[in-house]
Structure formats: C-alpha cells, structure tokens
Amino acid sequence: MLSQSLKCASIVFCALLVSACSRGLDRPLITSQGFDAYKSSLAEAIKDMDQKEMQAFDWAVSDLSIEALNTHYPNQSPRKVIRGEASKVLNEFPMQIAELERQVASWTVAMAEMNKVAAENPRFSIKSDFFGSKPQVFARVRNGSQFGFSSLRWRLELFLDAAEKPAAASEEFDWYKEDGGLKPGAVMDREFSIGFVSGDPQWSTLEIQNAKQRTVRMTLVPHGAKDFGERSLVGSSPVDKIDQLKQAIETAGSLKNI
Image 1 (cartoon, rainbow, N blue to C red):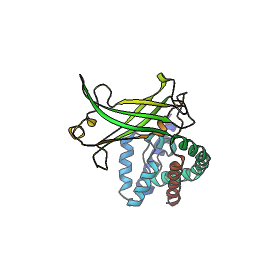
Image 2: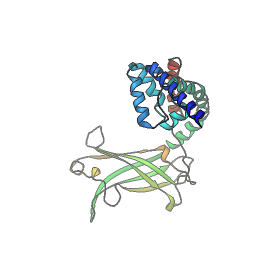
Image 3: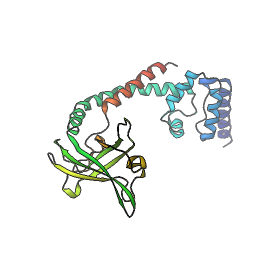
Image 4: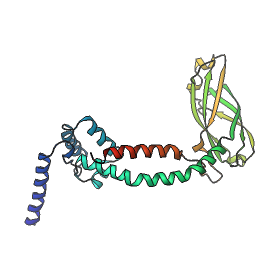
C-alpha cells in the first residue's frame, strides 16, 4: 500500500512539474477533476495563447463535453486536443462525404416531388368567439406528388399591404389521418386555427386587423412531411452537410500541425 501511494504521489508530482514548465498550447489541462478545475487550468493556458491559438482550441472542443474531453484527451494540452480533433476530421469526414454524395440523387428526386405539393389560394381571417380573436387560414392543398402523406408541416407568413417582411409567421401541422391520408393526386380544403383555442395574439394585432390588404404565403416544410407509416420522407439536405464537412476538413488541414 505504501509503495502504491508513493507511486501515485510521484505521478502527481511529475504532472505538476510538467504543467509548471509548460506554457500556452503545451500546458496540460486538468480534465479529470471536474469542470472548475478544467476551467482554471484552461485560464492559465490561455494567458500564453494568441488569438489564433484560442480560436483553434475553441474549434476543437466545440462539440466536446468535459467528460468526452477527459475520455479522449485525459489531462492533455490544448495542442494535443487540437491535433487530435484535426486528425479525426481528416480521417473520418471524407468517408462521411462519400456516403452523403451517394444520397444526393435520391434526395434531389424526393425534393422534386415535394415541390409538387401546393397550398392554393390561402386566405386569412380573424374570427371572434368566447375565447377572443382567433386567426385562421384557409387553403386548398393539392398533392401532385407520387407520395402519400399522413401529415405535412407548413410555414405560414402574413404580409400586410405592400410590406416586404411578414407581420406574423408560424409553422403549423396539417394532419390527414381522419381523412384516410392525403393520397397522390388528392385535393383537400384545409383550415388552420393559429394558436389553437385561444388564438395567437401575434396574428391578431391592431395593425393586422386594420390592414387594407392581408396576404398569406404558405410554404411546405419538407422535413416535416410524414408518409402513411409516420416516417419522414425527406431529411435535411446532404448537399448542405457536405459543404459543412468540406469546410471542417479545410479548417482541420490548417490546424493539423499547429
């Protein structure tokens, strides 16, 4: 037991000695004793880091928790963390890009089908009842795609008179379960109560009530569309993700030898 204790004490002493002799990017961080200890050690390291080095470290730890940092880089220096994350990006992201590139064609076809779903002649009104002012939008939804939908999601924007910016906006779900689903080629009249029972006050301001012209724009939110099995038909754009990964690779390449 005494021998083991002396060994542990020796390790701690050596770690402290290395820390005292190292500065900036090479100063070991304390990742194994909680966030406060880590924050304190990072503050000491930052004292001798320039702006570019601090930005590089921020990039490296942007998606790492203190637990993940301790798992992958236990008590390591900012330089080793940066190089480790840069190496990870350079090794893994090209494979992710290749997989995403294989998805582009099918995603493009699916998006083209989504563009065939339209909300025709959307109209806005404000109904008053026991609960107060209730803004409503009416539209005819036409499914010109090959897909069948259990639900859709729309972005609704209300423009007043000649304004270029909407006076109000929201996203609304559109369910078709009780109607047997929105089948390919189907046309259905839809009613959206914005804010449900009490009504959304942002859609019934005095400005909106007194506007001479009120125009509603309805835009389909593709990733909110579900098929008859409640599955998403279109995910986020693989093209956008590819661009993000390429940018990360470019950044990692500039930091791999920092």
